[in-house]
Amino acid sequence: MKVNSGHDAQARMMGGNGAGFTGSATSPTATGFTASGLTASAYIGQQVILGSVYGVITANTTTTVTVDRWYTPANPGGAAASTPGAGTFVIVPGNAPLAFMALTANATAPAATDTALAAEITTAGGGLVRQLGVYAHTTGVAGYTLTGTYTANGSDALPVIVAKVGVFNSMVPGAGGLGFETSLSSTATFAASGDQLTLTSSVSN
Image (cartoon, rainbow, N blue to C red; front, top):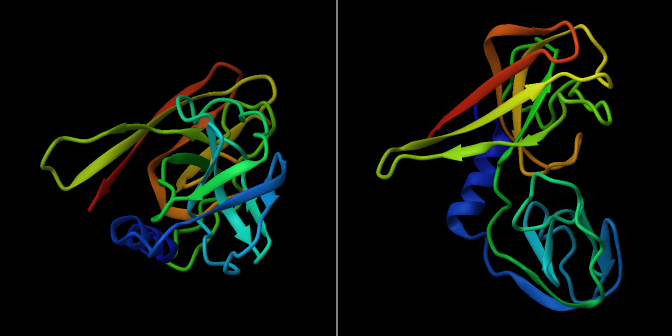
């Protein structure tokens, strides 16, 4: 189901969410930079480009921008990009895509007011953590799909019975905006390292 924050994100994507912003970034870190002239909390959920990388804004004050991490455009589902240098930044109008799929063993029915995926699997190095979904869309059709293949490994806490999937605008476990939350048609059990699940989320506009 599309949760309330997903409706908001889709509206920002399609309507542009007003103008973007550009300025000079100083003191960049792995999770943001300092700037000036910003409107507090005005850019949450938007993408900011600095150098050859981008991040998803999770918070901003009038003088700071906080991002979930830095992404390499050609491989957003891969490792975080290196921290960029100081320079001109651009905050892009709209909203960062809801493209990252997360799993949980929590079986509580999704609610429109949910803003996070309860008990999201976040085990560092595990094979069941968030990943970039493979996007597919047929021209002219009102909808699209995201597909992810998850393979348990030795870092995962097994066994685990996966019951729900959430779709976010961030690759970082526990971060970003939740757009969709869905109970699986049947639960999936990961009993041992090497167990695998291919999961497709279908979105109708």
